[in-house]
Length: 468
Ligand SMILES: [Zn+2]
Image (tube, rainbow, N blue to C red; front, side):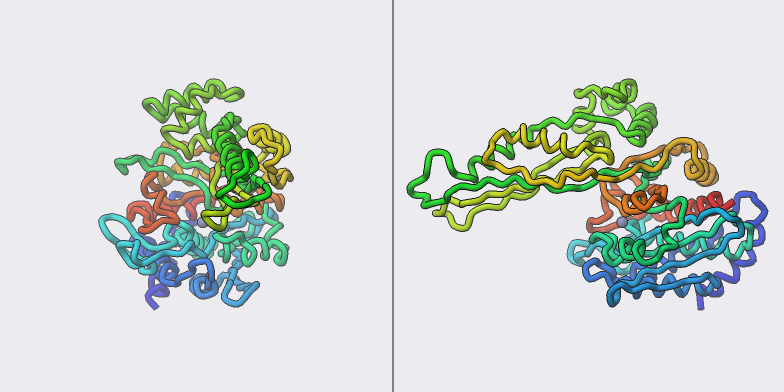
């Protein structure tokens, strides 16, 4: 009932929004965002098992209250996916907006608040999923309600997809939906998670709004050494697979990975360089001045000071698992190590495999790798409809803040959309310091209270611009 009465207040406010001027936000809008986020956080959608249907039902209720068409799909019991359509009037291909309803798990004892109770404390809102990704889900639902109330003319439909199973591969979520709901493939653009809106450490200034236009692709490589095995009391001179594998891992671990800037990474570094000071700023400026052949020592400096930023510029392969042995007095017959590689979206994988084989330098250590192309096309960057819309939207909320492209080091479902021919872009609606951002997937996930309403407004403004 409370949500309904707020809705009526906002219907009245909505009349002024259709004027084309910057719509003012209201205390009521802030309260709606908190109310919906509270409801979504209260549903434990830790994946596995997910249980996303319960959260999807909440979003469904909020959308139906505004007379927006909604359908729910359950590829498996409890794994609900919501698809809503806000009809437009023009003939443009639809805009797809996505957020996922599942979260990574949380352990109550590691948190200072209850992870499933949205809690305000010391200027932050805490709760599992506030960043990743229920905040975006709530803001998107509210943006659709607001656009519906305004009854303005829209050039295209907006499809809102609130999905299941993002954190564990999407088999019950986007992958299933793309295979079974052809209307998703009609979208021209998609807005998803994966961007970065960076707040300075002193929280006084939003430094930039970065739209994710490409991402690196995760791929595992297995190094496998074998030997006859035997009793540890009578070791052979050379055949111990553990010894050979350890030496091979050490050589691969020391392999340098040269930087190569994709179009999104190049524009990102060129934009970040002038706004970054000190040793990191100097290194970025040297890379920005020589984007076709980034100086290795500058890349090494960035890797030392900001590993995530350096990772944007290159493929990396890192040893993460070691498996061997059964007993302390048995020489094992096999030893395996796993390297987790993160491939640039246009990586030449057979060439990478050849480099790894050369680094291993031991014919008795097998290098197992899927050598297919990462097949992760990049969304266009630069002066296009999405960047122009983001610029116009951000100018109303964070005046003067630059909009820059980004290639994320982590993985999102946008790769699946890009493969389906949809130009997908990642946004981060909440302005976060690097410290805030690190709480996603960690205990005490949080967003600054001051970032909540501007974030919801950014989503609304973007949708409004893209459907003009
Ligand atoms: Zn996420």
